[in-house]
Amino acid sequence: MCKLFLLLVVGVTSFFALGATQLSRVSPVVTIVEGHLDHAPAGDTIRLYCGHQQTKAVVGPGGDFKLIVNGLSEASFASLAYARQRTALYLTPGDRLRLVLDFLYFETSLRYGGRGATANNYLAQSLSRFEYGHAGPRPQDQRTPVTTAPQMRQLADAFRQKRHAFLTTYGAAHPLPLAFQQQAGLEIDVEWARHLLDFPGYHREATQQAAEVPVGYYDFLQALPRRQLDEQVEWEPVLRLLAAYGGRLLPNGPLPADSAEVRRLYAQATTDFGPSRARDWAMYQMLTFQAPTALLAAYPVFRTLNRDSTLSRNMRQLVQRELRMQPGQPAPTFTLLDQSGHAVSLHDFRGKVVYLDFWGTWCAPCRQELPARARLLQQFAGREVVFVSIAVNDAAATWQRVVATEHLAGPAQVALRSPDPTVAAAYNVQSFPTYLLIGRDGRIQLTAAPRPSSGPAVTEAIEQALQQ
Image (cartoon, rainbow, N blue to C red; front, side):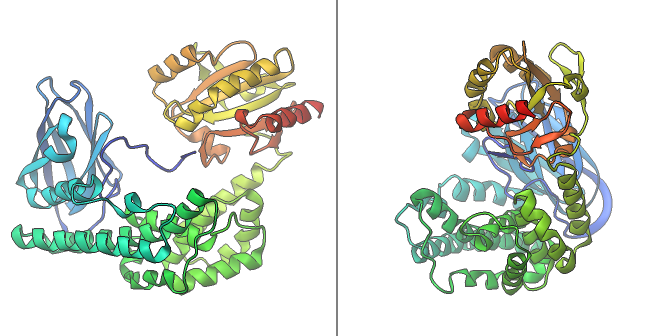
């Protein structure tokens, strides 16, 4: 399943992700990132993401580019993306950073020169050593179905020690900004904790049995710096950690629609993180992926105990959308263009059952459902059912090609494209693919309709909708 809030990254993943982490404040000046790319697709656009700012430039035929970042007033982590590859940067105002890279050897050839090179070469070398295994396998690459929780702790501890040792050695040989060293050290510790949080879920999925977690296994959470977690709770490594924490709270499955259970989980999170922003963000992330009935039951507790105003607003809006998406409520209206450029709206299908599919050509699980969808379409041929697919965040040319090759438009099926997630957000789509059933009267029948590949379950759901 493809998560809505995640970026699909092929190749190098960002060491510090897209969000800028604010460190030291100075006056705004021009910052330049330029470089040369060997064996890279020519003519594409290279993009630099720093906070909410995006700077882009076309890479020349010879592989040269130049990005000018205006208004950078703070030392920040950023991300550079080109040709479906991505790597991290650390920028300070006034830097003139030069990058050289051979795409055939992306993992090992990335080097920087110029002002700002020292920290960025650390990032490049750290990725090569620890993400691509040149300094030995990562903990998640060493675990097996027979790995025990104590053994996983040993693997994670050893990997953390290697990373800290490299940071210390590199910093001794190449002077690094103090703020950068502190942030790099925090990232190491946060990733260490996330590996340990991920283990019970991995074991359950690999063996179909719950992991035997000894008493005190989760004590590592007490070693994390709470103040720094609170200050940087929106930083991508911390967000990943807090998302993984949901497995600690719900090791055996989804949250029941029980407010008393929500209070118990809040008490556990308070023990682990204190009455902090990190606790509230962990609970928020866990709750947003629960079934609507569980979310609605949990909301009064969340509203009482949460102390973050941003999360309060977001959760209130989420609950309001869930209430609007309850069975029997009018389905949110939309008007989008089909593959021929014609405007199509939901109202056009009144009198028919609509099997609505939110997907994307970039989503592998979505593409895997297409053969079953074709069989389902054939099964209901001639009946009052229309199959409507809405591709979200897809490039027009790619979408047009897939619609044609997969035969996604024709009798009883309509292919639409939403260039942004507005319509998906109105339907409270959290992951892809998502399927819904809308009745003949334009009202919601099912917000989590079975997938085409579910066999009798999806057939029965559509038949029931036709009978109403």
